[in-house]
Image (cartoon, rainbow, N blue to C red; front, side, top):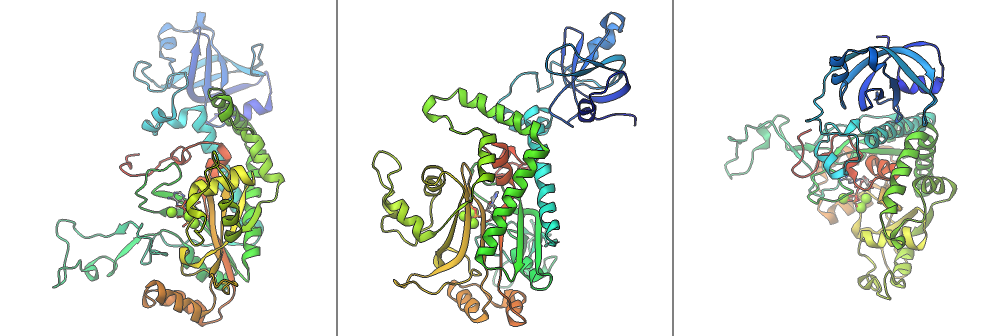
Length: 481
Ligand code: ATP
Ligand code: MG
Ligand code: MG
Ligand code: MG
């Protein structure tokens, strides 16, 4: 087709050339000015209609939401807000849109409302910006790893292991659910299922990723991940995308350095590539802030926050040091984080994480060396400290406004220690014989992490709900579109 994308036209700034543009009508003012958008940019292209010489029937069909094709000439624009516009010579309506029924009127809609019409929300400025930023971030992730010689390894979606046994896996079966085969003792007979065993959707590609790293040295996965999260939070989805690099011969420090470099790289990339979208999202947040009382307003704008993240080292400290800070801190009106005062060994709640990041350090934080008992079996064990407390070489990266964005660790490469830990935790070694083989034959120190892609997109776009940064959100009781 002869169509030129609106972004390219606006950037070229050329006048006096003939063009064909196609897109959707965002607004039509005074029977004269069409605001046209084709999704390539947040800016609408102004189309000037010669309404006196345009057929009245055609004019009536130029409504909000209609798809149109326009032939015309580029001209310098006298109006505010754009430097060029198109003087239309010929307009064709490709798809009508009944303005009475079209849900997206040219006004501000609430995010809640737009979530109900998620199939159409792509057409709004906000969601156009979000999904272009998301696209850029995913490209930047690949570029980061490819520049460093990592191999993109596609780990399976259907697996037999649920990685950490968190019980959040979705079952996969091709049984006729009205007629599930059972053994003599009445249990579901998975031997008769498609794979001859119980299977589920992947909750993490890590274990398979480790197999890749033990031969290719540096690999990463980047694919959909599934967890039957029962909670309705603004930070969890049932289907999300996870970036999981795994590196041979890396220790925990190397792992932290890589994760911090990755986050800074992709944020910087988006700031350069999607400046206009991020400025739009920045303004959107500023407008939202103005509706709040002064005391609750955020000190930094979205763009400031992103720049701050690039310009500062992430604070690194151990879990034990974090507990020491928390037990002496008074988050509100002298009330201490009571249960943490003697609570070494308990997992941090999001209020504690947020306190550390948003109040205490006011910057991204990497917490390391968590108690062994609250972390997964595959993390490398530290020697017990003077008080006999046992920790593992775990790291969690916590971001302002987000909480946990990365979870990772140096892996336990010592077969004996690993087997012992699996026994303690009741994880069947027979089922993971293939995983243990990496420790039997040429075991090597290695490390890796998982970065939740939507949490990254949340941070970069400044949105408040994870359901707004994935095109087709999956959460309890929602899988329609
Ligand atoms: P959380 O404590 O927030 O539930 P987690 O510790 O269970 O996260 P990990 O198993 O460490 O998560 O997974 C690695 C990363 O994947 C997390 O740091 C987070 O960024 C992301 N993540 C985990 N669960 C979800 C989810 N349900 N939806 C979106 N992202 C998720
Ligand atoms: Mg979780
Ligand atoms: Mg967690
Ligand atoms: Mg985690």
